[in-house]
Image 1 (cartoon, rainbow, N blue to C red):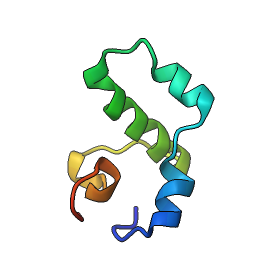
Image 2: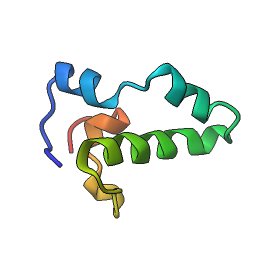
Image 3: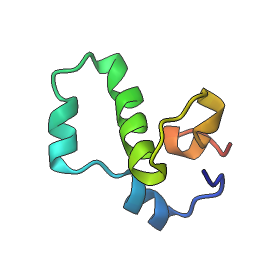
Image 4: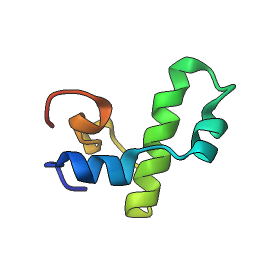
Length: 65
């Protein structure tokens, strides 16, 4: 997965749709981010992240990396 993301790419690939938000509703709040990241990562790459370091920091709302 690429490491540098511009805002348009983030919006396109990591914004949750209404049905996806509905899927997360009712889940334990602490698990919602992880599930959302796994879902969107799978949609983008066709595979799940194996390690936390494989997830671009910007996707998690961190600085970069």
